[in-house]
Length: 146
Ligand code: SF4
Ligand code: SF4
Image (cartoon, rainbow, N blue to C red; front, side, top):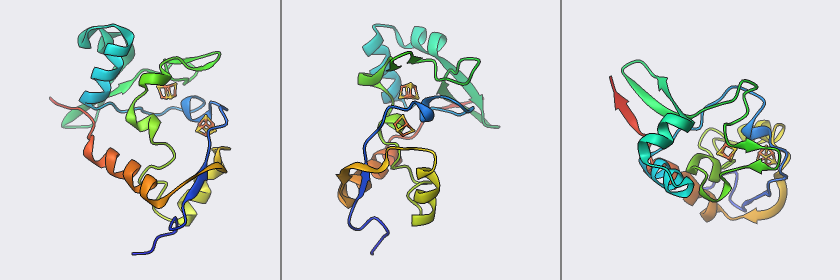
């Protein structure tokens, strides 16, 4: 079925830092994200969660998200950008090809008003975009039941 990104979409991060800061938000982690990040930082799973994560109350269960600083910057934001770039979570690696952004041309255009990297630079094919979407579907965030 044809979709609005049939011919691909351009995106190259411009390093403005907006998506890692500025507003309250969540970076939800899967078990794979937690493993990759804790190993990358040389920490045990528990120490990584205690130091860098928070439990977000979703009603019947909790999800695990990265902590934010008081100014809403991600805990890993430093003066030069992401301090965990090589092992950043899938949610970060797949931006802006998220399901809510890829719903339609309108949702893509709306998001592009916030992210100056969208519609610029490298062309990502439809297959690459679908692969990013599928990877998020397969890697569900860690759910901790109450
Ligand atoms: S908002 Fe866009 S350009 Fe800015 S850091 Fe995030 S991905 Fe990069
Ligand atoms: S982990 Fe890195 S890329 Fe992801 S929100 Fe935090 S600073 Fe941004």
